[in-house]
Length: 85
Length: 245
Image 1 (spheres, chains in turn purple, green):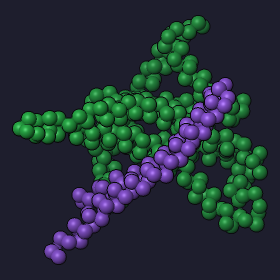
Image 2 (image 1 turned 45 degrees about the horizontal axis):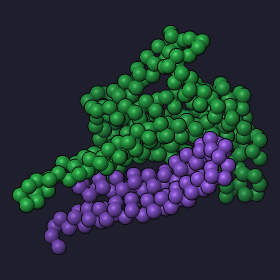
Image 3 (image 1 turned 60 degrees about the vertical axis):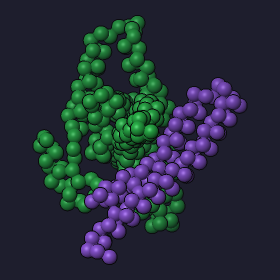
Image 4 (image 1 turned 90 degrees about the vertical axis):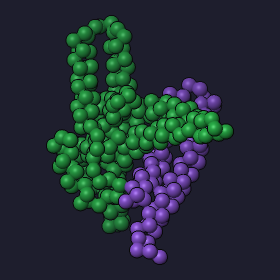
């Protein structure tokens, strides 16, 4: 246990936290986007002329799901800045 | 560094945001460049206006009719009064996102400053529209459908109201900045040479780099469209607050 221990410990935990943040954050939105995309394709296959209407709401829903992962991504970047600092 | 950078760089360390200690780069100058591009495009469009549209005019009309369709659908026929704001947000965010793909150029929207500025403008505008158009009805919708639940619902409604500009700015920033970050990291990996049997072989990370560049090309208009679509949705919520409850 040297004199620099708290800083190294914090940097180590920050690196661990950054990895966990982006890793766990991507799981939920990937599943959600997969389900939404599946429903979109089902809807288009059932009624091809509804494609233009359904596509818009799919993009809106996709962006809302992606935003949750991006919040985790921003935290990962903030933590990664602490790794070297 | 220009004057804006000195002001921001003197404030940022005091905020103690780890990893965000100073602003580097020419984002402000590239915002001016995208403004110039949009203004020149519009001036050329107006000066060469033909009744039977040619090629360039067709593209501009396609974009404006696309946004106009959504605006009329969401805000009703009176929604066309807000069309300048929505089309400006759409074109500005779109051009800002695309500029970063030109070699040597930097996306203005790859920093939280630009995206938060646009999001705050949109937020203040639709709150102003809601208060001046509907007055008391608009502020009453924060209390919820049943007056008994007002003390519980009011903090939740206020927090979710402030979550809107936050999510608008963070969504756009993270998409564009994250794309650039991943491309930079992959290109950094592509330059590593592995010595195998005294022959240096470059790691073939060019393929994922090109894939991420392609993804940036697709992300740019989608993010611009979603920003303007959410602006229209928030505006329609502000205009039609009295029909909700």
